[in-house]
Length: 394
Image (cartoon, rainbow, N blue to C red):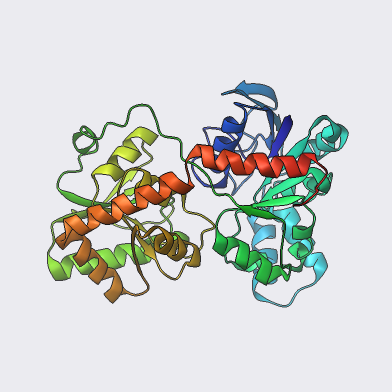
């Protein structure tokens, strides 16, 4: 079959998140189907600046069609309307204005889809909140699959999206918690689809034995992977960790892997490693005592899955229903809601390495049972079959 993916950004230039999720799924489906990706020439979701060349290319068996974004995001226009629709009474027109300012506004992509939708057996749209998904999915909803990547934030409550979730033939949810959240917030019970999630691509060579010297990570350390910003819980995580370190005088390092938008002073126990190659990231996880994931808003944590793939336990923010649910189902880690619980969890992980290793093994077994690519592709094949059949639901 011929399948098109529609996503706001695409390619190795885009690190992490829904875009990486989309790329991995597209590449694996390309092993058995003819797959195209319709996307923009932007790489930065804050500006939507056109960086890449428009046109058609091929990468890892996937045909990529890029279209220019019509206008860059203007913070002076976006921030006021985003603040209004998220925190105050507002009109439907203001919600539509938010969508236009949020972007990426890409009329050429939409025109292509309208002209060529009959060429595809199924369409897969990633991330509900973007202009390309909202308008693109309405072109041929009966053959469309939505991968919402929805989090528990204020945008999900917009009236704009209440009926939107009834349009696609099927929805690929990232977790049971995401499904419950969407159905509850939008008032749409029994939405078609199933919980799918994603597999994890593992490089051929993961240099576990060399990573300590490569990254200068000696002794006991914890790892955080992702965007280093307050919105991801990083400021609170760092404060908790430094307080715990001062109180215990533990010789432990917190290694932060990723790009940062917040400023703070590094010290002997908190180190910013920057973005490292995937093989070194996984090796760092494999040698760590645990992964710390402090975010309150996730639809699925791919980093948690990576830690479990490498056999390591996780310590997650229990205020995030998705993360707490992942940990409880896998029995692959611990969760916290306040500093005292954070400190007690670190004490347990550091003082009981056998327990930490056991939690990591349990997480690994859960990952292999539920997130192996064979399992993920079985689910996508079922959903594509529904979409290609015109939305006939089981």
